[in-house]
Image 1: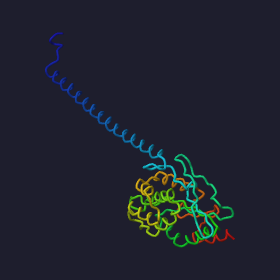
Image 2: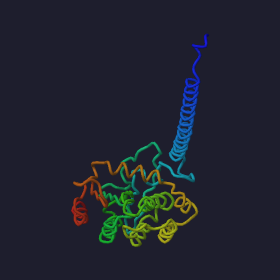
Image 3: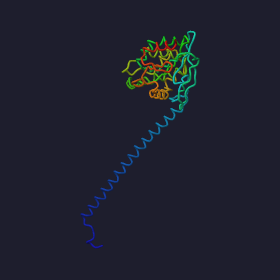
Image 4: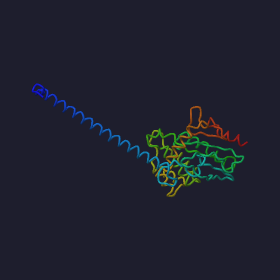
Length: 283
């Protein structure tokens, strides 16, 4: 190489600047890649944890200490059934529905010749409270007299009305806990929840207040308390509510709402017609 072929001092300076610029750009790209990998790893970790939680929630059994998509005992149809006679009313005991199972529309025990009344209710629903206050005694009298059977399906559609507290879902879980552990107290507990129903637009009742209502209705014991505090049937509440709200057989002209009442499988369009419809079916 001759002296004429050698780069000038100015060219060497420019080359050094270019090398430095390329190294700086490479370092920036390396830092960006590391940042993306770190964020992606955290995201994947969160997804993995969520997946593990979901798997645990689905697979624990009814007696477990966490939420489950399995249903409570005495609600194999998706609702708790009552039959009666001689002035008395009693729940029908059944198995539960497995986490991957679906409710079975089995006939209520001792139902021959009796009118079948099915109610879909949300314990946070003001119209349900009004309906129960007006007609519950008459309907249960039909059952006590041996003229009808009653099947109550608790659902949760009004969480949106309680300022993010999920009150409707927590109340529905309480219904499931009572159905599972103290089915003979279910109607008394339901009465407590409607009598003490919080106003919409509030946070609803706390877990402790829910537990007090359950106890006031006569459902006591450590199993009930644990079921309430762990929200054991949270998964089932979501599952059964989704099934019901997507069932065209119980939908009205504007979709599904509570209360929805069926008499011998037919939806009654107007709540004031429920008792006359039952009476007509009895006659």
